[in-house]
Amino acid sequence: MRIVIVGAGKIGSNLARMLVERDNEVIVIDADEERCSRLSAEVDALVIKGDATKLETLKDAEVDRADVFVAVTDRDEVNVLSCLIAKQLGSTRTISRVGDPALVEVVEELGIERAICPELVTARLLSSLVSGSYGLTELLASRSGFKLLEVAVSPSSPVLGKTIKEVPKPPTCMVLAVAEGDKVLKASDDLELREGQRVIVLVSQEDEEEVKKLFTG
Image (tube, rainbow, N blue to C red; front, side, top):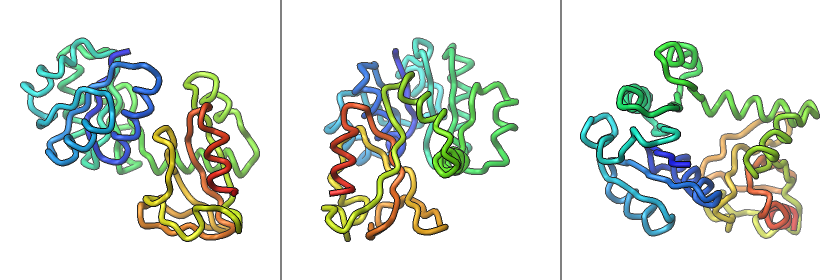
């Protein structure tokens, strides 16, 4: 598939890595030169520096040939506007990240195929794990080659005391959240991992065992 991603931040970069691993043709657009340079050096994807809300930038990325157009920057207005322009240019499927859960239905009513709020998605995934309902996990595994895992940080884990950014994860692994007792913590880069915490990760099936050993020791 030919997939255009707007945003080379944490979500966009990880998404690009995962999709390239699955042998997709990936094009990433970002306005930040440093992020573009870093991603271009790390991932076998075409990285374009530019404003995704500008017609010229999207034409340069040939979004009319894209099977999927995904906008995942941290700015709702950029994501929504770029999706709407891409749709007008002929992109068959458009997906927008939104930070405000209240905007999900509104954005989809504009004609964007899917609006995704990471907070809502994480909450639903955690609910699935906590309740013991693994239908969503199995769906991910069967259709995408990725699995949702909950792994406990053991006393002998090599990641103990490290921040999420410092954890030597494989490129196909994304930390979604960290549960501690009855609290769910945001998986920020500077969050330090402690014994007994439960880490929820999305990982390719090929790297599943490596990630389990990484957190459990």
